[in-house]
Length: 276
Image (tube, rainbow, N blue to C red; front, side, top):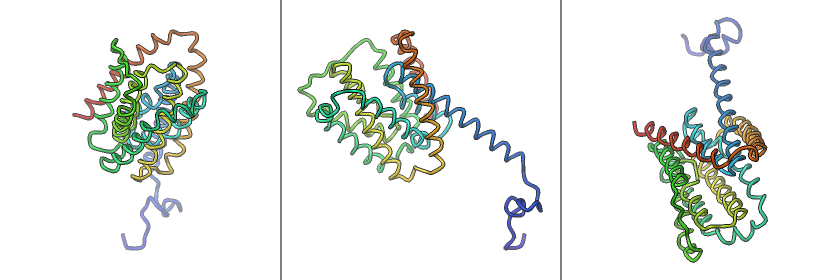
């Protein structure tokens, strides 16, 4: 082919001089439709879990999305639905200012550690991301399934809070999920139920913003992900509303048990995928 001529797939194809490869085009459309359908199902289920038990959307979504796409891309799609649903949860409680004053050392440490670890290791894009994500999911499931409940005295918060926040930030930057060890720590403080829900929402919201900053700093945000994020948000909200509607008609403890068992199996599967 002489210089200056377009390839057959370019302008010559548009002018009907060269034949288009219709089969590849149709296959691409089918793959896109399948990807959007999978994305919708994942976020519907993740939202349903959050509607029933009050948490779990980022954890469930991130775990299942890595079966469909690379972890860094999954984390990018997750940012918008995670942020909106956690702000929704955060705004529901009456003690936002008091909880922010109490837990600011944890939140600040988590934010700094997320950005620093992302620059050092890569934002959800290191070689061991998949195995680390699986380990985080499995460990969280094990801690929730274990009958032992740890209690942390409030007098230790001044040093333990920043430490937990820093570790949570590293886990967030590496895996895209921010439940470990922040969730077990907040639960161990034996907060009142309303305060716990709002404290979790506060922690998740700050971690989502930190993760978004880390992804942007690493150049992970791309415009094609915007439509997927909006679709994910709509599916997550629909799943949440459905979960809240059926919560009174089912046994949350039984649902939580099977959810944690499933999360454990998913975590083990991701660990094996990451190690093999």
